[in-house]
Length: 147
Image (cartoon, rainbow, N blue to C red; front, top):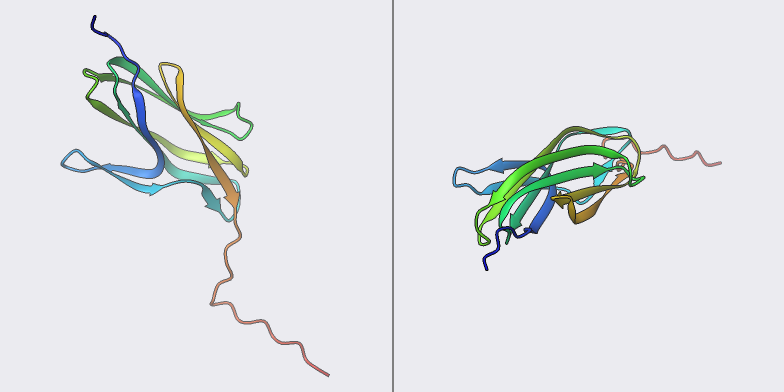
């Protein structure tokens, strides 16, 4: 008996600033993100990309990518794309682009990747406020007068 449909495996899922295709069909991932450090909030990310590669499946599928707020219920963005794997030895690469993503508050945001409504991965994206280091161009503090 031959299988007519096999749910694929998610080989990788990476959040990055940009994905650029090369002429040979390979991809260049720019600015792979593990967290977002900013000097103040709210902040808007110009573009976020989720790079997903699927393999070991057979059939037609619907990929859903969601960006979820720290309350774990509010969806900030959602992207969907249909893809097909004609043989279990093939792979499919999908890139979901979220332009102008606003992060209104610090916290742990989440990226969720589903195929046909089955959650394959959910990973955290911490957004933290970090004070910039003091600039070397600032004049040194004047010493206190003694006496």
